[in-house]
Length: 61
Image (cartoon, rainbow, N blue to C red; front, side, top):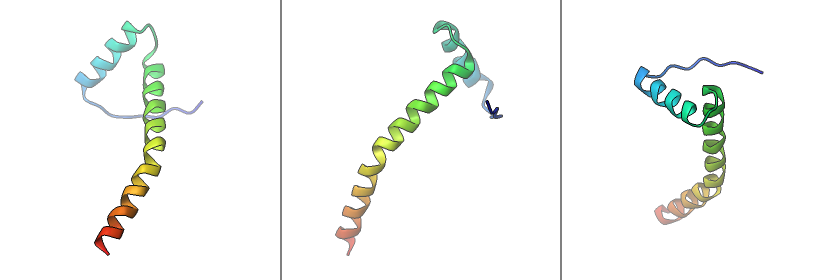
């Protein structure tokens, strides 16, 4: 498994660690799950974004 290095404010990291502890999982598990949810949401929004861009282009023509 690959590792990455990210930077964040100490207060944000503290919030992440507190949530991970409440949910009884590791920091890595929590961050992976958050990124999975973000990617899923982004993929679902992409077709709508493209449709909106096309509509906007048509209005501007």
